[in-house]
Length: 280
Image (spheres, rainbow, N blue to C red):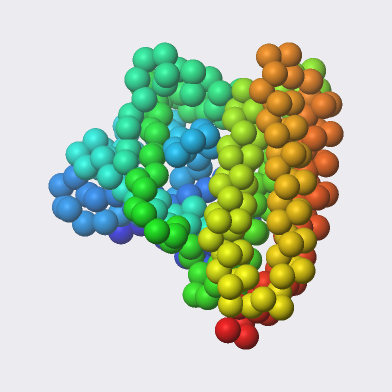
């Protein structure tokens, strides 16, 4: 069973689609449910994570700098499959412990973004493991933590809003002369997630709505046009953060341009689609 503090965080996380507040305000958190190595029972743990692009995120088995590996890590060694709750989505994941240079590179990115990880490493007296959690593709639509299509749309949009707000905060508080490696990854992961979301809408949701609600054609045409404009801004941000000599000022400019266009788009899409879903 989780301790009282962890259980409070878990309850708040699930009740607010990943928003916890307090000491975790603005933190990237997930809930990881592992299977007990000895008991075979499920155990849920709130953890900070690092975006890593593609189909995986990283979690670090620091245990607050304890000399012992945390229980969740030992569980994954015995059964390297877990359930991940991101706030917006719940999915099954395959756990892989990073080794050698790959682990060191990932941990260095984490330390660059938050020196607290280095303090944990020094205190622990052990090599703190880094674990990649790979999303196991299940087929069909994603499992969104919502009870209706309208709520699902808002939950996903709010997840994008929170991540973009975090990136903007990281851009403004970082070293003015350099663009940190983890911040680059955060931007690229956000761009990929947004691209995937809009592609899914263009290929599935919008044709479905167009077939059943032909009177909605003007709104769908506008939403598609906005997707095209946003895709250009996403590509501009990708280029800005991928360049070997990436300029923080340029990256910040591209983030602000994308933010302005995306916030207006999300608001319009909610205004148009949520009432439609509710009526259906």
